[in-house]
Image (cartoon, rainbow, N blue to C red; front, top):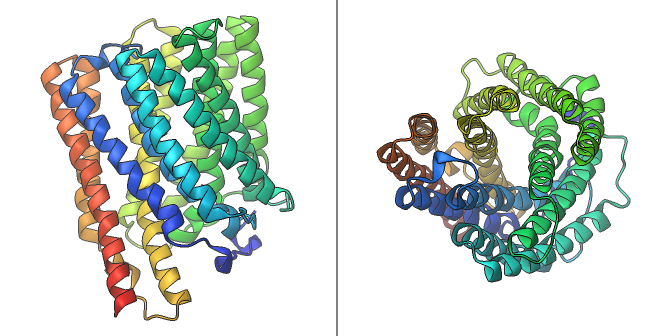
Length: 420
């Protein structure tokens, strides 16, 4: 699949406010994550502490899912030709439900509150249900021969499975369901990481990386088979987890790590062949993201062989904050100014250059703060120092504050251009 194989339907794009509301909400949850690190500095001692669980879901549900859902409202009609019915109304329901559900979930996990966990199950269950039904309705007539539309289907299925397992976990913790906790946790993490987020990142990258980073297209063999193989390996790994076959589970975990590594390494190789003589800020963000993904995968393998709490914590920091958050930020700094330019152009107005809508200087400052926060988080996890954890909290608040300010700067430039 090449980007040329896709007919991008820009005229089918939703209103600018539809994805933007998600893009502006996500960083606010990142700010809350920094505040949790600042005021609960002992949370990195184990991935099982209430604070660590709350922190993880502030990033995974509050930040990542907001950005991913916002992106899907844009990608599905433009890239996959899947028109979401009543997109503005659906987006409003999903936005409110996701924000309220993420807040309830993180408070319920952090405070150990069954009522908030139950509320989260209801809110997120409705939110995912509405979005998945609307997305599948839009996708029902789109071609499956092209990699991105097909892989978006896999990602939506993965999100549905991950969400169902997550709701089951919340019910277990609230006392409303009796299932083996560790087994459900493993399945939830695996499907949320690769079945939902990983597949969506790959499906988006097939188009976004060549388009915005001016690289060659991904190898046809990778785009044709990567998602299929990943889904098959996930299903087999899930069966091994459920059956209690620990050796087979470990072997399949290595297979999943190898598939993830293949995607990350291929992306890095493509970026070295970019037609840009000097990598821009967003390309450097993607390079950092893929490098962190690879390092995180190695930590996951180590966690399977060495029984020490630090390996899962470091892996989580590298994959969530270093990998997914960095990649999402890199995409946001391309997508948001492009959408502002597109909607101004479609309205027949003189659209400023994208560099004027989103200058390089503020992006560079944010990425420096982001890299510093990542480094201090890793030091905090390895050292166990509460002082270092608090410093990481300040830096995390700074980086997400800068991200929010930079996105608002694009919105401000867009409004000025509209009123001119």
